Amino acid sequence: MIAPPTNVLCRTFFIKAASYGTAFTLEVDGIEYLVTARHLFDTEAAEHEVSVHVNNGLTKLDILQLDFGRGEADIAVLRVRQRLSPQGMDLEPTVANMTLGQDVFILGFPDQMYEDVGMHMNGFPCPLVKRGTASNLGMRDPQELLVDVWSNLGFSGGPVVFSPLDKPKVFRVAGVISGFKLYHEPVKDKDGNDTGMYVEVNSGFLRAYGIKHALTIIERMAANPPSDTSH
Image (tube, rainbow, N blue to C red):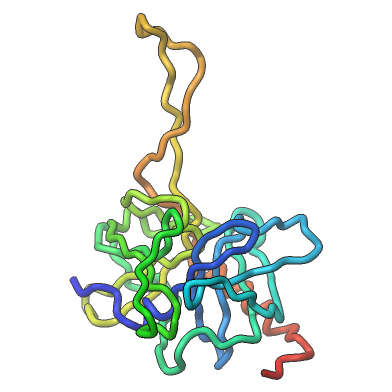
């Protein structure tokens, strides 16, 4: 299994909206979009600010467009004035040919951790990478992907990537990380009796929403482009 290549690493960013998290870029019809998780934003706010971590500090992004996933889809998509990723590093957004039980990778900045690689990534920090197992194929709507991997706060908004088994050097992005699934652990008293209370515990499964929902948002944005896209 080949680890995520440069075109994946250089598309993954440490951001701060209302909360810290992760985002990644996609190219659609020659336009760069920044994809992340909706819950990193205060969706009730009239205005939004997003900053990206670069050169060991936060730089505010100039937002041209911002739209959120509908219903359960925990996805947000931005178009910003700044160019973030190097051109010519394509990353196909699809779950096509993902196989049940295969290795997948998640990338992000858990607990605000990152690798400082200086200018090797144009001043952007390198994300942390974890390997997991594709536990389902996302057949429901909204498309929900489950990954058997221990996740932490901060991966939210990051990509789930994989290689088709017949093309091990090709990476695709299958989904947008929402967070780890929780389960209720009953609280018992000293005699082992159920108290009726519970605590929420990380189940060891990560939830992501299918990248097709991000593409739906991008279609809406492309149909109503901003008037000022000059750089």
